[in-house]
Image 1: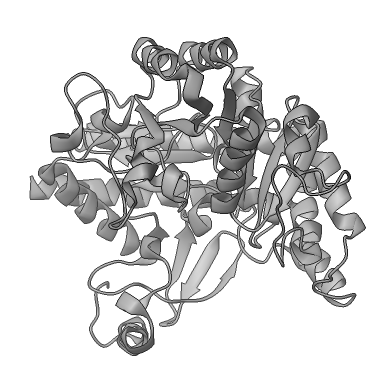
Image 2: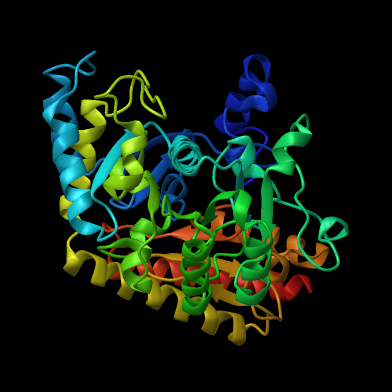
Length: 438
């Protein structure tokens, strides 16, 4: 049972505290009183250093759509490793993966690879500035887009900083320069009228509008189609680019979220599943906008390097991962996602606990709220909701299911019907504990 002060995970954490700040390299994997340390993974399961097995519904925060150690991905990566892991030269592998992505996304003609979703978003924002010659960006309140200063603005504002009439641009990290805040316009998610008004007000200075069609940190509520259509129309009106952050939502369908919603952005940021389990990012879009990277006439408008950008091991594993994700596989992921959401929603009602799930496809998020979840503010946790979330997460953990501490669950292709039943049963048991605590 977790926690266990005599566990090897506790011992590893004690050791890590000496050489790593807070004992970790990723704030996202921190948990109290200590994190669980992974030893190995196979299929949809992960084993910790104490030998406990869990159904993995974190999947490295949505990136492992095929679970752990998929044979096809191992083969692709090891075959490339035998040929060399990195070169100061381009390889055919990046052409192959770029062609696949361009074929799947109607808005994409060209692709440029990077090393993370953070870098992909950063370069997309810089590309928009380089193309338009304008300084400002607009982004949605509460939406996470990685660790770039501008993309972090208004990531987690408290109610005291929400503003009366419109969202206020608030720093996420201490030390963020004031000029960064001045160049970010924060817009509400799923409020088309208010967002359009703010974009029009700042339109002559805006390089782009950045939006995640289903923002995880803002509640994982899907965008209204009318909201995205309004952003598409107003960005064209004011001459700003529309950027979709599909680092997570590209796992929603064969053509990503933009295919589901039927809206073509100017630029798209990609990452996670396109790397086959390896670090990856990509900036993709119409060649008119991607031309800012083109060095053929000398120094490009936006120089971009990166020692490990388009790393051939990542490219080969990513290509194998994407080829496995055909239309039939996405249909199955949609089906198991709907089964899990329905099963957990029924468990909420059965145990008389307020709340339920939101999400689409293979993604879902648990909320302990008696209100519709549509944006960051409606998803903002009250203290009782935070306590219920903690009880629920620990209840899942002790029933052999891993989920993110804030309620996110990401399903994977190796999951069987028996695994799905086990996830629902674990959630039901955890909700029973929540009900008993109320």
